[in-house]
Length: 101
Ligand SMILES: Cc1cc2nc3c(=O)[nH]c(=O)nc-3n(C[C@H](O)[C@H](O)[C@H](O)COP(=O)(O)OP(=O)(O)OC[C@H]3O[C@@H](n4cnc5c(N)ncnc54)[C@H](O)[C@@H]3O)c2cc1C
Image (spheres, rainbow, N blue to C red):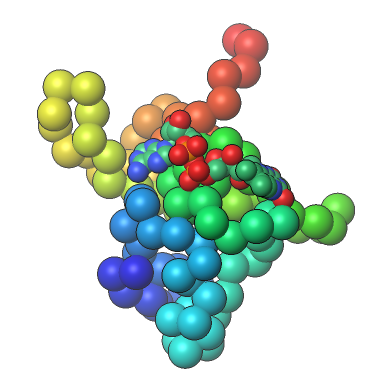
């Protein structure tokens, strides 16, 4: 985990960070994941990309908690994205599931 902004409820994480490594530092900062799956071995990027979900009809999946990302593109360029600045890239980064047009 890189940093936590408890006031905004936002944490910056490295993509390969395991969910199991998040509980203690998030709790120490007074925040937590909104929901998580049955197991906690996934990387945060893998869990978000595959739409990993926990339980509860009122709780969204993990990808719904992603508010921005820095990604390495196919040409090696590093791009930052969020819903406002790069909405198309952000949508793909947050949940890598294909959908019909
Ligand atoms: C025993 C078991 C129990 C499970 N329980 C649940 C459950 O309760 N609920 C549920 O919803 N799902 C569950 N799953 C599914 C699991 O959450 C997903 O398969 C998840 O993707 C696994 O995470 P991973 O880190 O292994 O991802 P990987 O399989 O390594 O990656 C999946 C995809 O994520 C992307 N990705 C991964 N790492 C990166 C990275 N560093 N940068 C960019 N993109 C990346 C890639 O597109 C990749 O193809 C379970 C799976 C298992 C094996």
